[in-house]
Amino acid sequence: MATQSTLWTGLVLLGVLGALQIPTQAQVSLQPNFQEEKFLGRWFTAGLASNASWFLEKKAMLSMCKSVVVRAADGGLNLTSTFLRKDQCETRTLLLRPADPPGCYSYVSPHWGNNHEVSVVETDYDVYALLYTEGVKGLAQDFRMATLYSRTQAPSAQVKEKFSTFAKAQGFTEDSIVFLPKADKCMGEHA
Image (cartoon, rainbow, N blue to C red; front, side, top):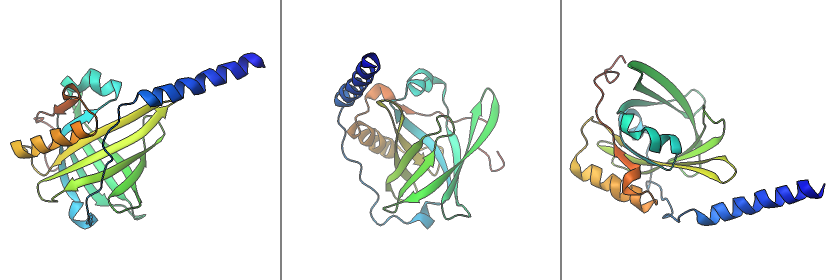
């Protein structure tokens, strides 16, 4: 029994120490007076930054994806993303459940089965949107991602700079920020 107690104490300490070592990032604010209706429609994922090991390992192989945001029957949002994977178009849909305040949503990760929170931090609705997602994969394994949505496949240099500044303010380093190249496939209306 003492061994089990010692093991749990050690795990708790590791978790606390791990949390203490997480670099601090600026508190994420939300888009003031978020207007969900204006946020609906087609977006292209043009930039990403993340602390996830899979992202850091595979970021050079990623390409832009198309996402469509529509109202779900239950009052949330369906986020349907189409992307190129192994030379095939794949489509996945996430149900974003509204949370307070407006512009904040939660979803269950299909891969990990845990809750994530996504916030629309800044948008002009017509050109770009900056999103921030966070969740926990396991004991002291936080997941964080910054996303640049663009209404076009070619965001301007100013929008890219805005995203880089935003990502760095969240504690991401230059090497964890990537601007995704356009994909030749999966970007059309019917993809």
